[in-house]
Image 1 (cartoon, rainbow, N blue to C red):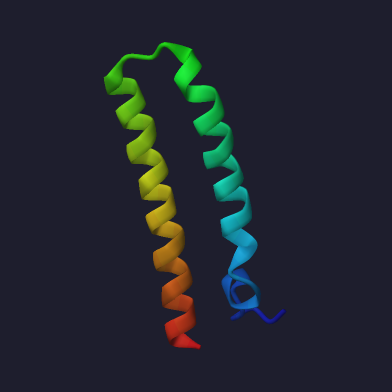
Image 2: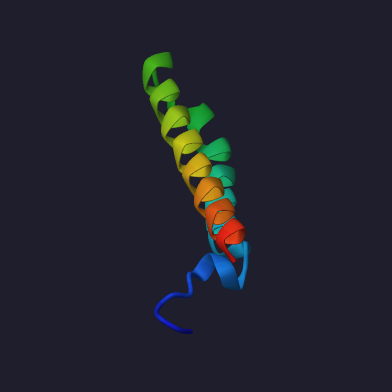
Length: 65
């Protein structure tokens, strides 16, 4: 892998598998926590921002290839 090659150019699953595994764990664990809606909302916003960042980064690499 050269210095200019990003992991996103090798496979789109480099970020998808761990991210969706985290989202699956979060979906299984979060409902039983009894957290207030504000905290749940903050967790969901952070997860959405992480997903968006991964998709945008992956798209940017694919467009520049």
